[in-house]
Length: 106
Image 1 (cartoon, rainbow, N blue to C red):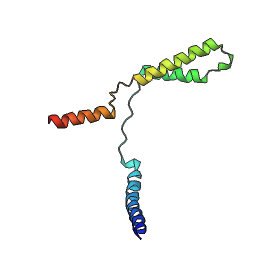
Image 2: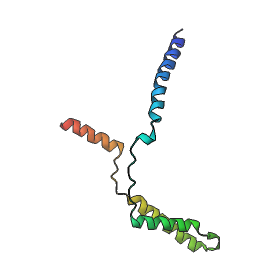
Image 3: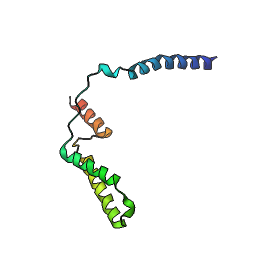
Image 4: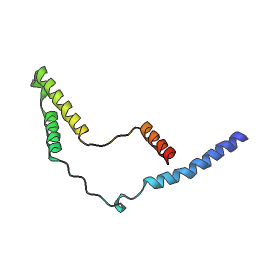
């Protein structure tokens, strides 16, 4: 009998949470204001166009050294695009330490 009540309780609890999550996910996208997309810098556009050119190339006629040079170029372009956003990244551990220090000091 205890198992039945436990399962019934779990069922009722899960049914009470599901509609709230569905309602939160079905927010009308047209009601939210659309922000203007950020303008992409010219150097980033040039690098993206170069990546598209390399992807569209016919590499079957190239030698292995030419293919290797292209791979190096693609890696450097991708690394520069990845590093170019200039964000500050904090790990979860660092955030926890900062919060604990703030709590202790204040």
